[in-house]
Length: 285
Image 1: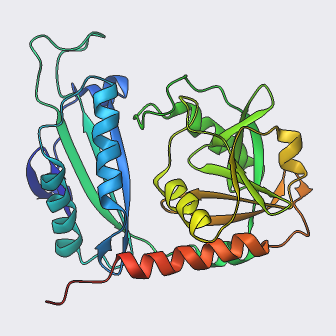
Image 2 (image 1 turned 90 degrees about the horizontal axis):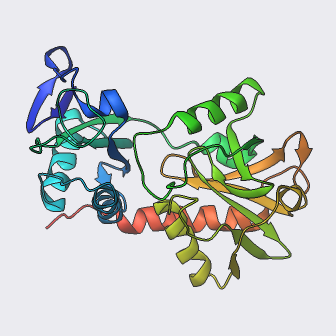
């Protein structure tokens, strides 16, 4: 496997990242996960745009253009023979002596990236999963896709220990998002999800699904709902780059709807699969 580290492609046994990297000390950086289907990147422009927006929000300059990073991702796919999987890419503020304020003078940001093989979670997408509610104790800039993920790690572990696949986070009873996903409820044919604020990450798959809802004439309300209202939804699902459109059949041990994947959720899954096929057709010219 080849990796991309600080401007070079290298093998795993040749990797070298400084102990003074601010990503290691402070989680001072941002990242993206970009899905690969059939050897092609999916919604890559949206992911790279968000990467640069996240960097801007933490006053960090990425020493590459979006097109250059796109080329890095494609080379990782080609060189590592990735058919279905994803690209992980992160940018840290660079290596400097440990001090909380930004290095003065500034040091070059460090970009690392690698590719992973991984199949679509088709089994769970058919049968659905269970999730557990966890208090959202994270910071107030969840709109930044930063490396500071300890709050999400703790929430995900609490869910795992309860035998669940994901955590549904809430602040004072209002559902925000998942530990690494966006949450959606369906009631009387209407899709509900938290609006885009500083309390959630504007997921790329979330954007795709909302676009599909518009195309399919499925009404959407971007408004916060309570945990109690989540329990009473007819259907429930969450979205992410790797989970796609994942049905939820149980929340905190309570059955959602009839305990099976809902018909509207399945309709969105089918539309999402069609979007994948449409957007990842290889150029044969």
